[in-house]
Length: 249
Ligand code: 3PY
Ligand code: MG
Image (cartoon, rainbow, N blue to C red; front, side):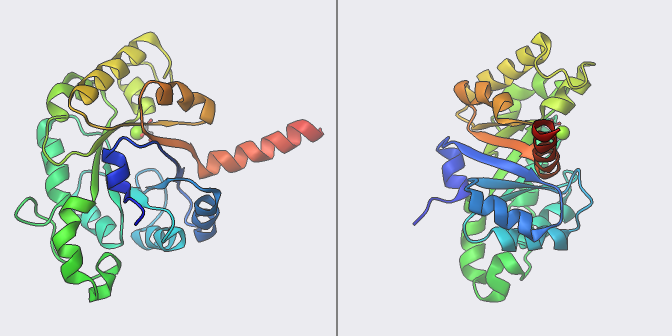
């Protein structure tokens, strides 16, 4: 059987994905057919509803696992995202160990957590309930975003929180929190990234990052990052249009 998203993640296998923000199932189908290893369904920075996200997951299935970035570290959003069948949850802007522990608790059924039991797409609409209940805590990837300088200050402790399967750097918010909005290659920002990498690697926690283009993420892949979100649906469309116009006019 094909390894799951979480199995690939914790093995530090290279996972190349892209961000979807548009509630268009054809986009998930196209990206799935393109061969992306995973899709980052963004509920933080999009106008999508949970129903829209479910349609994307249905379109990407069974080929391509989707991790959902929830709008906040919130049990209501997280349980909805899990119930529609997310293979992983990405929690934005986790800065403290309390916040990281909360993210884990929201993603896990008792006794490890406080996720409540529903019957929805993830549970095969009831048909796979027992099977799902017994495996979900182990099978779902819990990924926290490190995207504030305060999180970098706490990174040594954050990577040790039980149940965290990956840390995903948000370079844009991180640089903004350092007074260097958008300057993701700035030396101080890169030093903060190095600190995150050092602690994640010591704790054997997989590292992820977003970059707008393949060129932007290439150095991170060389540096040992394994979970990459490259580009955003909207950016990819816009860039394709610009390339045509630049070459023909
Ligand atoms: C950021 O760069 O802040 C992100 O959240 C990218 O996903
Ligand atoms: Mg961010």
